[in-house]
Length: 522
Image 1 (cartoon, rainbow, N blue to C red):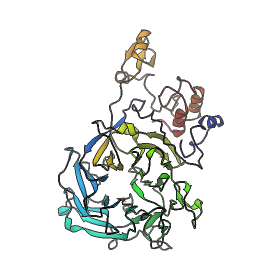
Image 2 (image 1 turned 120 degrees about the vertical axis):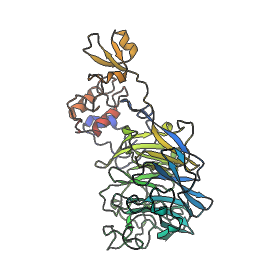
Image 3 (image 1 turned 90 degrees about the vertical axis):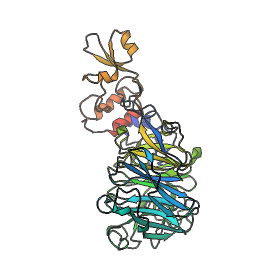
Image 4 (image 1 turned 180 degrees about the vertical axis):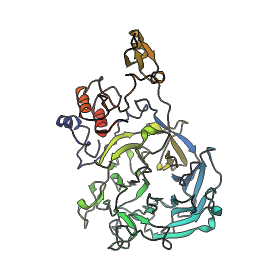
């Protein structure tokens, strides 16, 4: 069941219908026994499903797939470490091959969660600033270092190994919880997740300490001004108590974060302690300063509140799950904004490192609600070429917005669309061709109708075509109370307004109507 309230009950009676599906808003706890009906065989309105294909193997602990701005021909794969060397490999999307050389190498620590952890390209990489930034650990320190593409050529398949310049460094008291993610935000600043420094329970309360303590934070720095950087003037603690670099705090170990390519919202998968994993969210218009709660809270649940500020001052996750069924460590992902799977637009992908599961949902920031939640593990693994995805260490994104999955065992998979399933029913025209219904070929023949496959049927505007807006039950161009009443009228039946197209009018159809409330069909 979802953690947030169900987008509001528009009719009192419907609250009773939905009560068994949702918990209270206060609880915000999600059961991951997912309903897989929507995506298992493809979108029921005629779109394809999703799958995966293995594109690279034999890698050394891959922990990230990323891209240079606007570069649709290459993706860059971060290998955490091979021996004591972290490496970045290039996969050529045009030739579909993993290049033999290395884009970048760096000496790193070799134990626990340490190594080469993050990679980011300057927003103007192809516009005079061919700089790449890495986040790695060495000698009990985290380093943020900048390299320049070889010969100042952004199309080069390597960096100038002698160009490395340290931008920032800070101590790591333990070998785990190093954070490691870095990326440039839509504002052009470099964001850095640091982790709480490790050990159990954040013994130094580093995540809540905002003075002379960069651990357990999301940092935000300006690498284009200052030497070697400066803190943006609008960072929340500039000029007041707190470190200037801090953008937000109360973070345990944000393992994989991302910016929504369309909205600029920031998503974080924050690894929990013993029981709760969380997905945290920061809207694009945030002014920073959020306290995400750790170590006071693990997810929504009190962990160690001694000396903590009021819960009302904290920002709790939009989604959490517990450690049942072998789950142990969230892997944050991306909001899909690609071109190849348009019906997945706006879905946030994330997973669990131990259980190898992947889930998706959509999030409405205006109502603070999660909806369209599904588990898609069985769609992705095994891949179409027969390989299982295990130990999900990261998701990734290319310049087109297509998504990838990293298996720490040495493989990278691309998420792809599948071919649409053969239609179970298509268009059946009556004897005089004046009426049309959706029906199987056998049923159509039994009443002496003329049956057409779906691809033949859609060329003629008729009642057999799915409406532009499936939730516009009365075809008046907008989803409103009239459509809600149509759902109620057909509740529990198999005929009538069925926005999900699954053959049963139920709470899933209700949620579709609510999600599209007052949306005008285009």
